[in-house]
Image 1 (cartoon, rainbow, N blue to C red):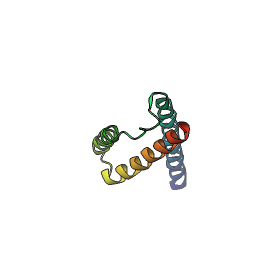
Image 2: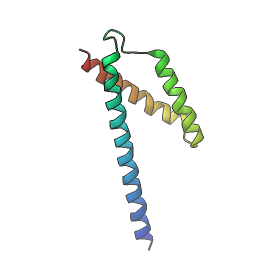
Image 3: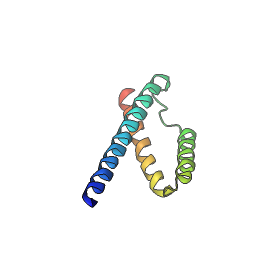
Image 4: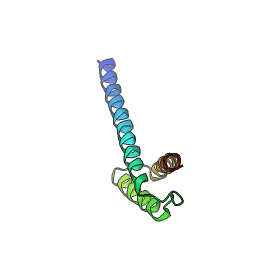
Length: 90
């Protein structure tokens, strides 16, 4: 019984992980679309990045998630987005 419950929960975690990967793939796909509108010399938009962080931290707080942890994750996501945009705009 316990083993069955454990397996069910693990499968739910696997599905949640897949959703995270799908969400990241979609985010990076949309970020690449933005490249068409970007000036190759001005990829970084400090104000937009601040707004994104503010928005996700507010949402994280509403879900009782650790804001420091979420901020670290999003800084990495934004770093990767900038890297991808830089490669596209070369």
